[in-house]
Length: 257
Image 1 (cartoon, rainbow, N blue to C red):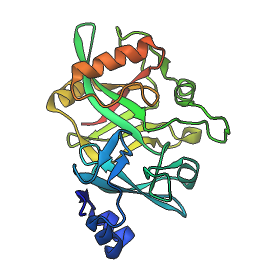
Image 2 (image 1 turned 90 degrees about the vertical axis):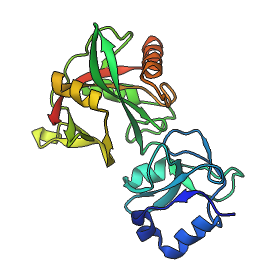
Image 3 (image 1 turned 135 degrees about the vertical axis):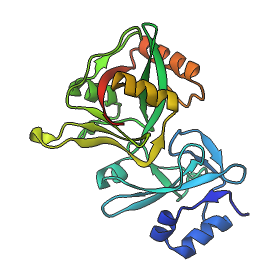
Image 4 (image 1 turned 60 degrees about the vertical axis):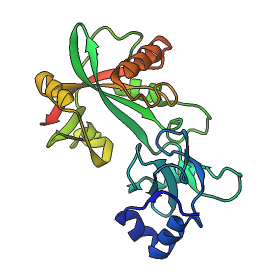
């Protein structure tokens, strides 16, 4: 049965026309899947679904996402991320497609009210547990790793977190492009997170960013925030994560306009 799949030109160029046509015809695409972005179930027979191709140094893995979560695209990841963090999303447990659990950081923009003033914020939540590089432990080191970088634990949202020097948020032409961190050895900044397709932000968010010339970044482990369609629900989720000791934050200067 044909699937409601989106296959971008970039993905088609990588997998070839024959494979792309087989996917669209429903031959190789699963009906149900776990979205590689939000990790909730999807059904390519019932809703528009994006094909997302993760490419490492030697390996390529095809995954699926709700079209409302991610556009169809090619995502470059390290071979370690691809090999060390794949799991089957084929519902029958047999050979099937796979998606990296550690390769993607989900980013949501929203306005957060602190001390009676609206501040532009980015909320970062990985799509899977983040393990310390080189570690064989099964766990989630996302927050400890960020705290080591200078992020501050947040137990309640009542004041603006301290500025994390050397980090910045890159905004260009009204679109969000990247979160930059200091380069090693004092070199040029490098992307900690980079949009594979520039993200449009609301005019109110951009106005607040231009006013304050900084952006607040909140980060939480997988499963702490989830997909929140409204800013009031996002704030509720942030408050709950903070109360549970699962939130860190930092203020970052705005780079660009």
